[in-house]
Amino acid sequence: QVQLVESGGGLVQPGGSLRLSCAASRDMFGFYVMAWYRPVPGKQRELVASITTDGITTYQDSVKGRFTISRDSAKNIMYLQMDNLRPDDTAVYYCNVDWRTLGQNYWGQGTQVTVSS
View 1 (cartoon, rainbow, N blue to C red):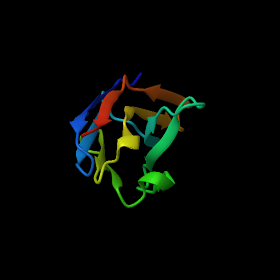
View 2 (tube, one colour; view 1 turned 180 degrees about the vertical axis):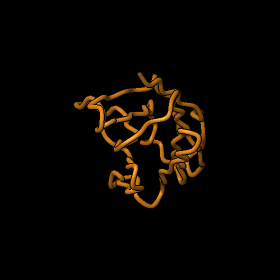
View 3 (cartoon, rainbow, N blue to C red; view 1 turned 135 degrees about the vertical axis):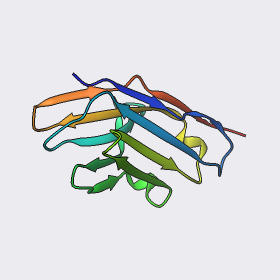
């Protein structure tokens, strides 16, 4: 079992920055993908960014060049640096771990990001 705890959300003005963190409760082994998701109208959640154990990253087109995903494997923490935030980035951001080696999938409780002047 893996518990995920997100932090770092808040209220920021357009053009501002936030850094989200997702801390996993235990070490993981093998291959897994850590990711950030956010809900969108008409869908459950959309992928914002992901990072594999090999360090391969992917980004949603709308956040490319503004968001950076990273991971500190020694501390079991994933980060999402969000720069040049826009009002349409406003959402609850959820941390996800897809632990492919064990076939397990986990979600955090979410952290609210509000971009408004």
